[in-house]
Amino acid sequence: MSDIFLTNENGQIVTSSRDVADNFGKAHDKVNRSIKALEKDVANFGEMFIHSTVKDSYGREQPCYLMNRDGFSLIVMGFTGKKALEWKLKYINAFNLMEGKLKSGNQLTEEEKLKLQLFSKDASEVAYAHNRLVELATAPLNAKIEEQKPKVEFHDTVAVSENCVSFGKFAASFQNTHKSFGRNKIMDWCRNEGYLCSSYGLKNKPSQQMLESGYMQYKENTNECNGKIHITYTPLLTGKGQIWLTKKLNEYLN
Image (cartoon, rainbow, N blue to C red; front, side):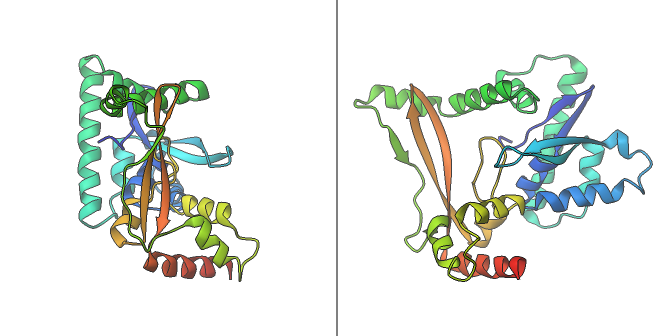
């Protein structure tokens, strides 16, 4: 459940619409619209959903929702398929775990506390939590690097197919017909549509939907800086992914 982030909001455990969108392979703005559509018909909407904000890739505040277990159950009710079922079960287990600890007063582990801290409105607290979670996740790798001299400064840990291209190369070709829509705009659009993740620690990693469809792959890059390990993701388009994305962008721009 490393990709599920829950927090305690005024005594109830909640997750965010951004997290749900990323994990279920949905566009965040579409998830938000689905939630907003419930507001006029659900009498206790305010008990299940909380208006909030999240920063996009440009640092701009964008609307999102926090939701408790009931709100989550209501919004994912229509999500179907094997993978959707797996994520539903993961969330149910996560809610059970966190609510059980909240009721019993049991101490949270360091990792659980850090995941809650990711929802803090203090940017410095979020940055610390993110870096510490990466440290914990990569501790074995870090120890191995320390043992081996000279230290590895950069290492690609995921192999990809030879027919994949970067978003930069794809954009160079796509701009032959749409000159104003370059690499950064294409990637920002993909994040907004939920095709690329935008949450902390997973930014630019293709969504599960993109990986399973065979449209995208990625490189997981491990960088060492000042003795700390940082993981970043480089998304790549497969051959059929380039055809698919070209069609999607043309539909959006035309």
